[in-house]
Picture 1: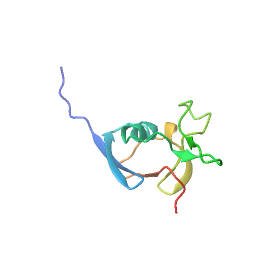
Picture 2: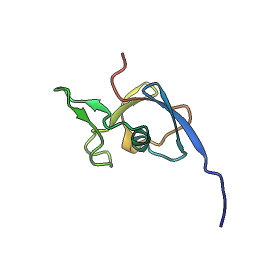
Picture 3: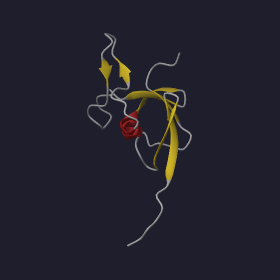
Length: 88
C-alpha cells in the first residue's frame, strides 16, 4: 500500500479561500465550500448544477474574470478565482 501525499490546490470562491485535491472540478469545490447555488435566475431564484455534464448550463460561474464558465467542466487550478455572482 502506497502512502503518497495528495496534492492540494487553493482556489478563491466569492473571496473565500478553499483548499481541494488537485483534479477537483469547480462544481465539487463549490459544494465543498457549502454553496448551494451558483447564480440567480432573472426572477431571483437560486440556480445550481443540474445535469453535471455541461448541457443544462445551470452551473455557470465567472472564473478568473471569464464569465459563463461551466463549473461542471472546469478543473480547479491553484490560485483560481471563482465568482458565483456577477462581478460588481
